[in-house]
Structures are given as C-alpha cells and as structure tokens.
Length: 49
Image 1 (tube, rainbow, N blue to C red):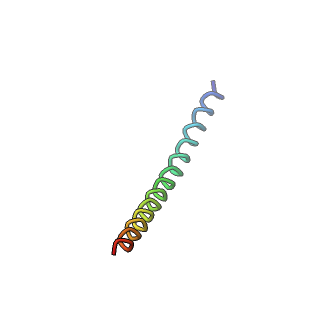
Image 2: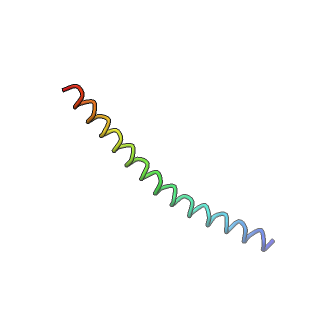
Image 3: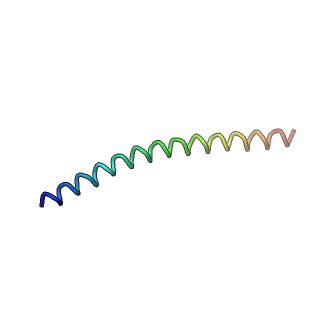
C-alpha cells in the first residue's frame, strides 16, 4: 500500500515537471511559428514588389 502511494506521488510529480516542460516547449514553438510566418510574409511581400 505504501509502495502504491509513493508511486502515485511520483507519477504526479513527474506529470508536473512534464507539464512545465510542455509549457516551455509550446511557448518556444509558438515563437518559432510566429517568426516563420513573419519571414514568409516578408518574403512574399518583397517578391511581389
């Protein structure tokens, strides 16, 4: 029983760490996408001029 509780706690702890990493990753991903969109948009604008 004690083992089970420790395992559940550990899983919860891992999940929290995982979620924090996920937040950071999604933030980076969004920044990267915005940068990509900006570059793409810029490229199209320059091409059309």
